[in-house]
Length: 361
Image (cartoon, rainbow, N blue to C red; front, top):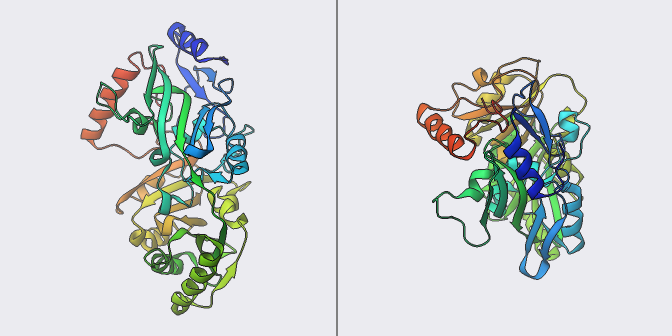
């Protein structure tokens, strides 16, 4: 099924008798899919509905390709603050990533350390719940009469509470200039204290990660004169960690956001969200190819197929999510109190249990 309007989508859900697999571009395959589910595609719900560059506001259909959204805001020298990533290459999926998929997964790139996550830039949503009811929430009013902050609730719900039809964002002006301070000789574990030193510096770092073959990377953005001054000062501050290089270009940050070192590589891809101070201990336990983001607070690892990496992360505060790979248990287990809460939410928004059932189980 591929509805071309919100009304068609609502009717399709109302009439559904079997489970539905919600699919945007098909590039974010995290979690379990029901084998007997009917595919419900959102690609027909596309297009920019409202764009006011002067107000830094964008409203767009959930099925709109991410590349189309980014091209529109880039043309006005603006950007989505959270630097979303296209995971098509990472998951090996043949589809095209959509903005609705970004919101459903709360997908946030390297700039999260400065600008916050996807949900922090999201100011409005429209979606159809499991009963076929159209729900709208947002603008500058962040709660509706139910008391739920539905804007935040939908980000990261992976299509289990409702099918997004429209999303609204606040934007930021694009930076006039950017520079990256690179410490090429640091390994992943060695990079963590250097990244921490950069993030706690007064130089307003907007990205802090580690890529194999590149090394530790710290980005500064802003006005050209300011960027030049801050990048030089940051390189000096990081001198105790080794000789630093200052490079231009955004290619390495796009590679980091898309986790390109794992493209085309066999194995499962796991994402660990932890305290950066715990990163060296987790890296020692993993003993696997990795990519670091968010100063070490986000670790991507390439592990053998069918590895349950949640056990590896068990003694470390945080959680693990399998982004690529088959099998049950892709998401971290919930505490009993949280499980009760999420079960209640799903019962309210999807009383028949037909929207991506078991996806986050």
